[in-house]
Length: 211
Image (cartoon, rainbow, N blue to C red; front, side):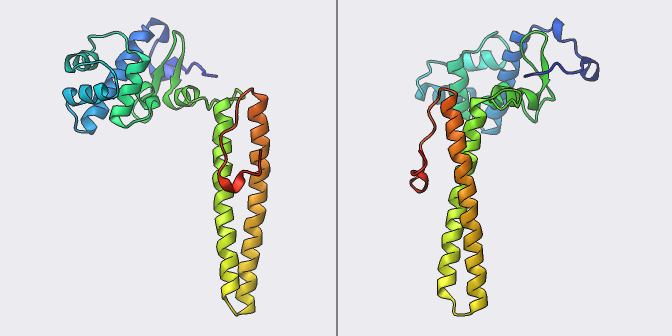
């Protein structure tokens, strides 16, 4: 849940701001900033968007960036983000650029708060996105630990020294335990995803035994 910030700290009265125009202007500013960072002209950005199937022009891009348009469509936002090689989130929320982000009337959040809300990572909600992020994290941990265990067993088999062999064996066993723990969390998370009425993501071959 987004929380209204202390407006006295930021010296802004949220209720007096036309937040829709403000949001459009902020997105336009980010498009202009990333376009210049990428060394693209307005024509080149328009051409890149056309290649993605968005019917636009240099003048349309220029009018948007210069504030002569009050709205931006979702399709435009996605095309701009793809053409500029930047997550759409960073066009909507100027994370690391502006301290404050204005959303619906009466709500002014820090850019980090707004980014988490927009990305579905708000801790106050069950959050389907958070479930998928957790799933991805532990799949990665399981894969890493599995590779570590395999490498340690290979090294244990290749050495004659008993002490070194024991050390590699201990490393392999610890990594195996890490795999098992990760698998438990993955299975629980997949259950949580299904409980939310969603379909869990596909699993790598290593983990296909987890349904």
